[in-house]
Image 1 (spheres, rainbow, N blue to C red):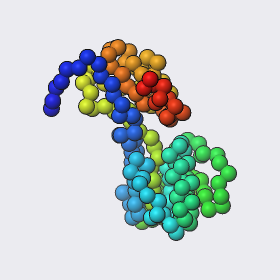
Image 2: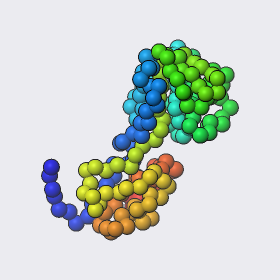
Image 3: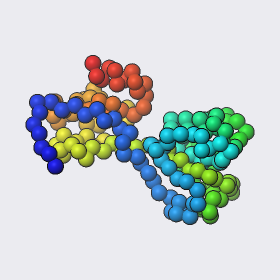
Image 4: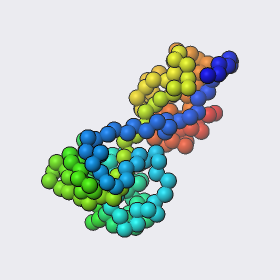
Length: 181
């Protein structure tokens, strides 16, 4: 561990470093590949495969669409509370979270089932900064304006500590520009 002293601290690591990776009890039985959207790097491996995305926000929508554009034969969108609600192409299907997996067959509580090659978990991220001292550490759920930040940037309990890029994804790059100014 190394301790240094600064006049001001600006944390610009963003919020996409520590994946929220909920584990369903049935994952242990899956014989395909499970990854978090954080680890998504290429789509060529999805050609002629069935890909299931778990989640309903930006990453799930993006990964499902791009996997389809790269030749996936089928996309299964799975949700916890509400489906994405898009008019998808015919090779897409939507189900609640699976309640059982046997080898590569995924079973859903709505009676549906699908043979799946890949599961991509798109469940967001934790705002976690273990490298920051406790009194400078942002602890907040992901939000447009995180709880502890004045104007979304300045740590309320220490005006010499700033966090840039911590808000939920809404106009992200424009927001980063404004925050950095």
